[in-house]
Image 1 (cartoon, rainbow, N blue to C red):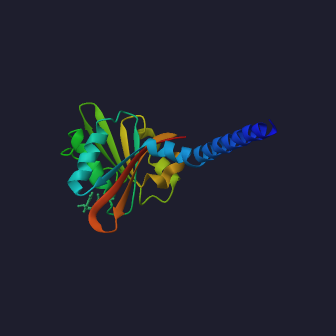
Image 2: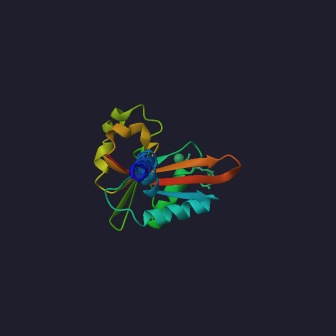
Image 3: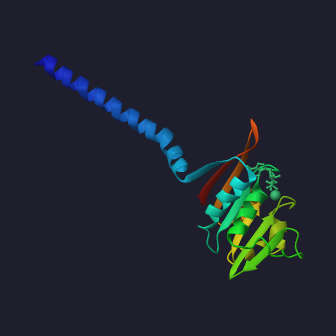
Length: 180
Ligand SMILES: Nc1ncnc2c1ncn2[C@@H]1O[C@H](COP(=O)(O)OP(=O)(O)O)[C@@H](O)[C@H]1O
Ligand SMILES: [Mg+2]
């Protein structure tokens, strides 16, 4: 009788340990899993593939979306932007020469604003050119957008570009929604 009771208690203890291990696992990997589930990852093997990925991505964009492109020089941010412009049939539009920080493209009621904020000192300079006013007016694509992260809207889409060491034409492209 005593032995049976001890065996039962032993089984309960094992079950508790098991539940605790699952709980720990969820804590450790759950967050990361959730982030990964919301992330779209692509491997591009050429400039054209990057543009193709950008076109598919552009098909889901809507007015008010802000897209931050993050990656080293030559990683493909501008090529990706060209793909987005091609999707909206804006590749032949003449960009505004007025600004150097932002190029404006408009056709068929779609405005695309292409920023490159690499040369900005800080966020204040972005505010000084009226940068924030562009956010609601169209689709904003911001190369090096992480430089002005304090003035970005609370929700935006981040696209990161990473070169692959063993192939100069390969890029890892990662798309995820940032919701603060
Ligand atoms: N898979 C690829 N995706 C994008 N660009 C690539 C790829 N492979 C090679 N390239 C080359 O890398 C360069 C990317 O330039 P660009 O888009 O201007 O970079 P960034 O705007 O990030 O500085 C281009 O010369 C392009 O031809
Ligand atoms: Mg560029």
